[in-house]
Every structure is written in structure tokens, then in C-alpha cells.
Image 1 (cartoon, helix red, strand yellow):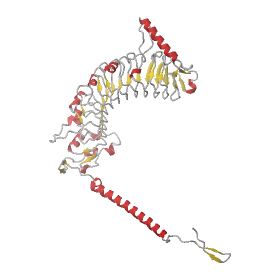
Image 2 (cartoon, rainbow, N blue to C red):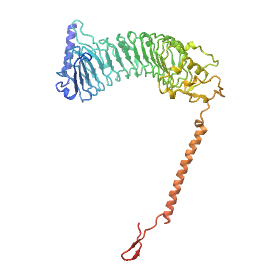
Image 3 (tube, helix red, strand yellow):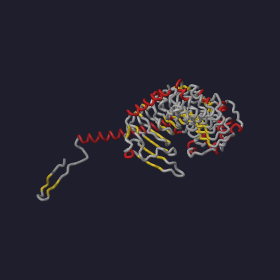
Image 4 (cartoon, rainbow, N blue to C red):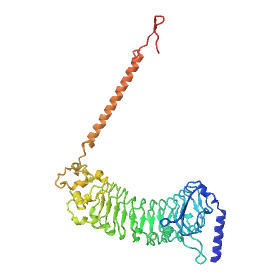
Length: 497
């Protein structure tokens, strides 16, 4: 039965290939860019066929005759990007390593056995097309047949399917490419990683980099990441998560987590991620609280980016006692006023809570409230030694109180802030804006401009009216010109209209 089934599959594939139309390989180098680079001690030999934006509508029937398609140590780079191909047929046979790209090709379907004769396919880019989950079957991403094992697994290393129309995946979509290390499904309308989609991911046991950003995700089934033991980088920014998905905590070996642009209000790590070294929680418009205790579960972080969080007013830097290996911290372009948790009793924290490996601290473009507590924190972390960006010299300044407005945070450590009087108002500490920003000054400025413009308009109208009235009465500013005939010695008046 297996032999009969194999014969039927081969017949179906041969029938599909026979019905396809292909581009002429004999003249393809006249229409496209063909480059042949010989192998040297420093450069790997490769053949380049760049047919980007050349008006092609079909796959190549074969490779150009001058290409070496038998040497497995050479590489062929084929680009069909920017052509209106619609349906992608099977790639021509080659034993070389193959890198293939068909971006912006308006693809709607791909042929079964797409890589049937290209067992050494390395990287494939099918991004920015119209492919759906139904078009990505197990037969599409399969290797050449073998009489003993029925088929051979593809050695595909990188697959880019971003910016397509994939809302779900078939369960067996990736069963022939388990060696895949880099997968991008960004900007697809996935919505949820459940059911067959979750089971498809579970087969990628060698996957190291997974991009699921901007995919409208709200739910990730725990089974989806259960088999991803080798995953090191996970990009899930730009989705609709309100908390860190539970499935993420199954990724014990993850090193990089991109979590930004999600509607998370309180950042908290409920379970350990012991190998996480880079975390990005930027561009979260609803993030207003970062849980102090939660960083006990991510102690290995070395780089933390939390910029452009406009709802975040407080970031307690005493988290450094948990993040002893933290080297870079970016808190720029947010709404931060404090680097401590304000309390009624001013308890001076121990300097030991801030001692760690921090090398870079970015605080620019925040409305800092420069008080005694902020000064102490900056002193504890030795802020003057952590400046690295040129913009820090102009944009990292106090906004309140008024007496410290425009003072650079690096200079705050040299000012006696704690003994300065605080102006108390009905709602506590009051900030008196500069004179030119007060409502009365703004109103008077606008009124002055309005008066000047109004007077100019009125004077202009008066002048125009006077000129028209004088002209109507014959009292214009011009008078007729008289001409005298010298030859006849007679005076005559000629009026110039």
C-alpha cells in the first residue's frame, strides 16, 4: 500500500509540474542580474540570480547553464521579489545550498513539493504576500523522497512568513522542517495560538528565534511552547496581551523577550525565567506600575529597556538589589517623576540596595521632580558616571519644583536639595511655572498680538476707503499731463487717460 500511495503522489506531482508554465532559463540572464563568484580562501563560492522587479510571472524552468548546480559546497541565491507571480511553482533542482526570496510577489498559493528537488535549501523569505494557513500544508514544506523513509527532512534553517494572511496553521505544517531555527510569523492575523496552530509550533524542537509580533494575539495555549526547548528569542510585541502569557514561563532557556506595545498595566513576573538577559517593555501606553518583587524571578537581566511608557510616573531603582547583573537601563521618553516609591515617611534606603554592575542609565525626556529622595538615588547609583549619550546634556533636567527647573540631573548631586524650603499648597507640593508659561502671561501675549494685527487691518481698510472716496470725487493723486507742440508754437492740452 505504501508503494502504491507513493506512486500516486508522484503522479500527482508530475501532473502539477507538467501543467505549470515556467520562465525561459536560456534568456533569464538577459533579463535579470547573474553573478558568479568563485570560491577563495576567504569567500564562499556562490551564484546570484537577482530577478527582483523584472516583470516575471512564473518560476524558472531550470537554472542558467553557467551555474554550477552539482557542488554542495557552493551557494545559489535566487530572488524573485517584487514580481506578480500569484502561484509559486516547484523550484528547479540543485544540490547546492539555496537561498530563496519571493517578497512582495502577490502569492496566493504555493505548489506541493516546492522544495522537492532542493534538499539543501537554507533560507526562504515569502513575506509580504497573501498566503493563508490553508496554503501551507505538509506537502509544501517537504524534502525529496527516499525509498526507505518515504521522504527526507528539509534542512531549512530560516523561514520568513511575515505580513501574510495566515490566521491559523495546519497541525502538520512544520513536520518536515523540524531543523528550523528561525521563524517569523509577524504581522499575520493569528489572534490565538490554540488548537492545530499550537500543535504545529510544538514540533519545532530546534527553533531558536520566534517572531510573533503585531499578530493581534490575545491567547497562547501552553501546549504551543511546550516543545520549544531550544528557543532563545521570543518577540511578542505589538499584540493584545494584558499580562505575560503563562506559556512564556515554559521557555526555561529564553534569553531575549520583546514584550513592548502590549496593553499591560502592571508588569509582573509570576514565575522564574532564570536565563532571561534582555527584556524590552517599551511603548506601553497603559503601563503604570512595575512590580518591585517580580524582578526576583528574572535576576539575570543585563539589558532592560522601558522607554516611551507615558503612563509610568514612578520606577523604583531599588530593583537593582535583585538585578545585580544589570548593565543597561533605558527609562527615557516616559512620564517619570521619581526613581523611588514616595511615602509619607522619608526612609533613607541603604546604599547597598543600589550597588550592581550598571554601566548605562538613560533618563532623558522625563518630567523629573527633583527632591531630596531623587538626589539620594542618583548619588547611590553614581549617576554622573553612567552618562553616555550626548542628548543627556540637554534633555535630562528637572521640571519641578520651580527653583530647580532646567537643572541637569547630573548637577543635582552637587546641590543642597534636602535643606531647600518646599512651597506647600492646597494639594501638597506646588510647582510655580516660569513667568512666560503662566496663564496670565500667555493671555496677554495673545491679546497683544491680536491688537497689533487688528490695528493693521483697520488702518489698511481706512486707507483703501479714503482712496476710493477721493477717486470718486475726482480728487485723485494724479493730474493730466499737458503736451506742447514746438513746431506750430501752439499750446494744446492732451489728456493721457
